[in-house]
Length: 303
Image 1 (cartoon, rainbow, N blue to C red):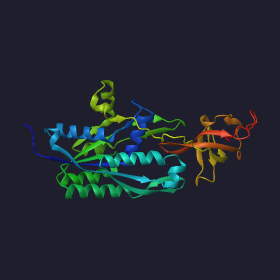
Image 2: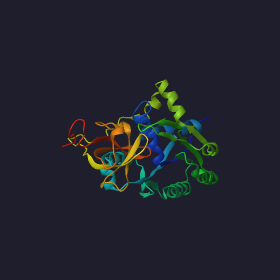
Image 3: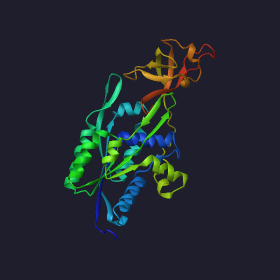
């Protein structure tokens, strides 16, 4: 018998986790498109209606929140990310998602999101209590949210987890992975292994799965050209190295395959280079890298 009671949903995004997922489908795995927020919300509504034995018209998203550490505007612009971040924020806003940001801090040459998980858990639990959520939806893979799941369930809410597991080797030869805690999935009411559902749906050209993706123009449509950054080879390792530049507080990683006009084995410390930056799962890398005053071809610096 169909349940006609209204089902109130709250959706909470672990922004860093979602970024890795969206980047994976954009650059590594078919359909090589960004995740669609609107398509994902409709997918969630459909799944809740199915699990709760009700019509989707009785399923309402009453609150949605996105949490992530954030670069300063200066750093985002320097790394060529400012425009794409603003476009994504426009999408979040158009979908009625409340954004929550804390500044990303750098420690020991690594970037850290400090305090964002605590904020996430507090906001989610408060929504369960004050908005009387029937279903709390968490888009995350982090086992640190297991206490949140238990507290939400003890308050009478059911919990849906959207998790992904995938691994791949990036352009620098480093293995990247995004995994969802097995325990987190096991204690949830409705665990969804999204990577499996998407893989199956893509093979069948399932319209519901295809609607999870869309094309995002990530660069403004004008004559904007990225400026090459000047630096020097700081250190050289086996197949990779680091570039120092006054534009960056930390040395920038580069892989030998990023060199466009020079052999890696002929590089030396202190050599002048120009480069663009590219974002990867582990942070920024220099790509491509152009050696200035290349002894083989003369001066190939960018004018």
